[in-house]
Image (tube, rainbow, N blue to C red; front, side):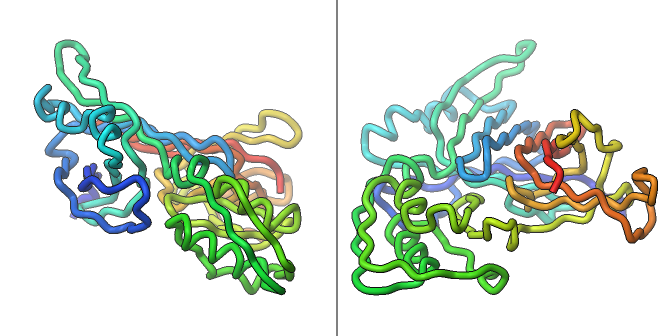
Length: 290
């Protein structure tokens, strides 16, 4: 059976700006390759939300008007979008965001709807939190509480790989981003993937690791920009995030190999970009030496 690229763009039901629910029903779903779909997802850094632009071709002006951002916002509502990609209809979620702008455009007389998405921008950097932690509490538990308040999920799968610490009689106030930093200070760091917060130690313990070679997705040889910086291109990596660790097998002379090796080029992702169109899909990474 041939491996045929597939994808979906799901436009979900509207919900209140203050809603903490992560569930919603898909009102419209556009399927690739039945529909010509293109998207680009760009990261800024591990502690900032990611932006996304989606183009859906063959959509009418009337359908586009259903997702008028200004009208939706005026009613105090949000319209969420999910993007999934995969092979032979087995698709994996790669992005969840909220419609920020909607445009109706033409490309060589072909109409398309363009959606500009933000990733939990309101919850992350606008919504205000005021929470008091009386007595002593573990920093990770305090983080879990403000995640619950703001409607984020807290990924605790890696808590055993870095050292937790105690905070005492702490009051946090401000945006979710500010409150998170008030709790963890410089002792821990975090990254945001969709609506999930994951902590990692200042020594980089707890980050997601990827082993890349030409057999499992590496498309080009790593390009060294300077002594500390590399650029990499691979097949689409849905689980990648700023802060992920990339391990690429090399020989003892530092050359990339296609076989198992005791030597690795170890990198940490600074920024990344996913792109998807009719011809191809890939992830471009900007990395620093680990």
